[in-house]
Length: 426
Image (cartoon, rainbow, N blue to C red; front, top):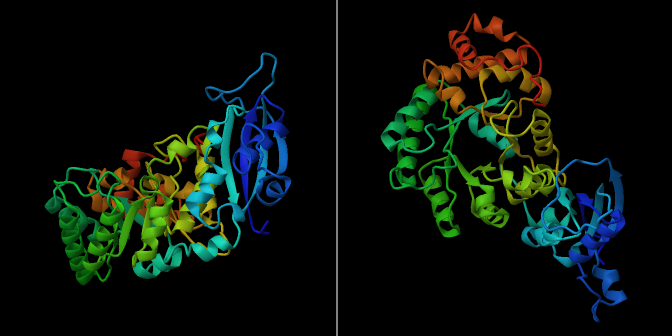
């Protein structure tokens, strides 16, 4: 077998002996099946069979059993972290075929009452096949002329329903307020009430005008998610109009489609994580964000959503911080991707976010936290900028708010969840 291997790390829960369950995974996902067959020779197994590298028993998780699992009356459920090596000769440096090997039918095995892909260690041939992000953190900063500091952005709200001429007014106000980044909501694709071509024309015109007045041009991520032929045409439409970013919902098109777009793309790709909860939410099933994010980065996402602290969804602060760390950790010597914090983000979260991430290489998106500001979106941008300036300089938010009325209004409306210490979500 080739020396190149993919090492997959799993959380495994089973009523079988742990080693037996691990071997079942290795066999099912490489050369084996439910019974011995004539042509699975020792020579073939030596070259192609997946290998169990380690089985580390863990304390009981308390997770419920998956339906349809095998269990004898007196069996005891055990949990383990299992590492399995898959030879690259089995599938080559191919994202879809890699997933067939390390996931594939794995989640359907009766022998497992819980199975979650936690992480992937990938060999160098994947770096040769997939170039990854074109822009990442540094390229995005260069395009925005923001060499340092947190990048601040928003999502157009309402998510759907705004006609292009109302969108024009929203973009104008946000650009005048000095925002760095604006994006379509993931729900906004190419609907009859606001066709992508009309949005592109209106938004790029307004951004050009803002640049002429202020000297700064925010980046706008147009959602080009669609079938492959339309996605390429959507990208070309944005690029030809002078747009500077496109957004793709990674799970809705798949890693292969993202990689396909990356080969043809001249703009930063804003990777949205819509539907990731299907893979990550159940603790005893699915694909952990750490593994998922590596595949998205390989496929070419320049920005990648991680969720944010004190978010409106299910993830704890510790899970969010782990996701941010995963995106910022070098992969195969590179693959620099910008973490995107979103979901219920407000000015009051800035100090704790900065304290716990210890970086300003973040794109922080506040949808309702900007558009819901009592004085309007422009004041929402001012409040977010003031909050992050205070956070990075070590100034108390209350003190900063005495100098910035928009910040005080935001704190009065949204609060400061960590003013009295962490709220326990982490």
